[in-house]
Length: 426
Image (cartoon, rainbow, N blue to C red; front, side, top):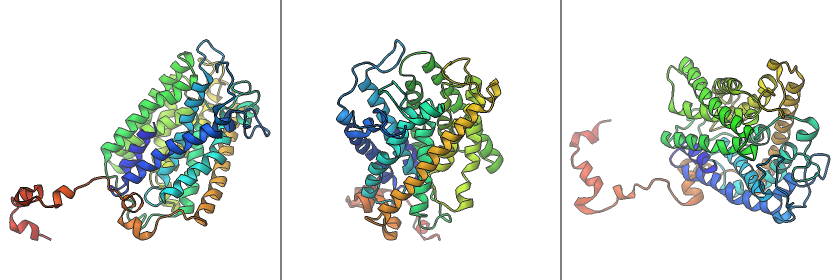
């Protein structure tokens, strides 16, 4: 999913910035992978150390793991496999944030941000949401065990968390040069659609895999993930048609991701019709929310706020409406299934708690980096292109068209057939 996200984001930036966008995502695999082994899994899934807020250091270096498999059904998996599965969530969450601030962030400052952010924000929030009592340790996080909010695969811990952080980061870093007068056009829509397709495929592991076995919950999650994503594409394109007069490829890809985001927390707690409803609502509302950044003047370049923050909020809260125990007794009946307002209130509290914590702490981290080692590249580097300034590379090398090669060069062969007057127009 993370390479898929890299192509999804990479296609939306300008050609002079695509390598940096790919690298911002790729480095999350390296940085978070190391930290997860050293202490991340322990902080997220170790025995609670402080009132449901964070785990202890019992699994440092992925040592001291229980020998019993994880889970209560016949499809139990080894705990080390569970640790690696959860690592994938930890990796993609900071990668999602990168879409809010492309084309203007120093590469090593981004690396430092990722390391600090996952330590102070993601690992504790993962403990809140994913660490159930008696699962990998005796006691876990407060959202999962005290509040008892429903989040099957990370609507709060991943998407609301990343969306709130993306908003904070783009506010601290400021706008790109000439934005919004020059918002920047996607340099490769095929990249965008490829990335969205890889994400859609990988999301089955994300959602259905959270059942930790080939069981009934996995089947529900697989089904609702498919249906919600399909409905979200339609919802987004309908909004585009009425608003802009044309359905776009970028809109279809964005709608798919919005549906995937929204169904993530709800995928095993709603029925197929509920999945369709969640997806369509998310696709339509997220499409409408893209304009928020222009109204309020923050340069969320690739719509992390509109897709991940808003989509995550929609999916988390709609469990309180569409949730049903008819297919999964571990869930809860929402308002439309006779459950009243109780679960709806719980979902709102969980969503707002993660949003507030992520936004505030991310703002502090970003300000500290900004005023110490610096967070943003210079205006000159931004103008010339971040790929060249940060990596000394370019994504597309056309030097063969411009360099020598005598009468046989491609450029000469092409220009020799152009009438002399053609180059004088304009």
